[in-house]
Amino acid sequence: MSNAKFTPGPWRAAGEHVFSVKGRLTVTRANYGTETEREANARLIAAAPELLEALEGNKKALEVIAVTAAEMGFDQLADIIDDRLNETNAAIVKALGNLA
Image 1 (cartoon, rainbow, N blue to C red):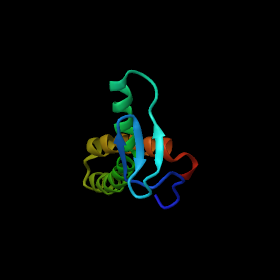
Image 2 (cartoon, helix red, strand yellow):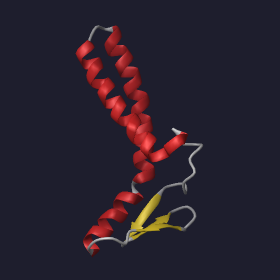
Image 3 (cartoon, helix red, strand yellow):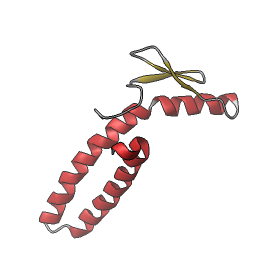
């Protein structure tokens, strides 16, 4: 994520606000829906940096597993892993845009 243009994580949610833990800056405010929905949205947004990091790590692991499965003749498993890799890549591209 070295090329990422967003505020570095970790982030934390406090009510409907999302803050950068390191810089103590407001990243955003979830201001749509009921109070319960706004707080849930803020928690989800606050998890974004860690979720992206997990996706990137899982992508690397899945790439290795897919190659190994194919080499061992487990084509069905390799196909399933390739599907998960495609989903993972799509989520990363959605998060990073042109930086992915």
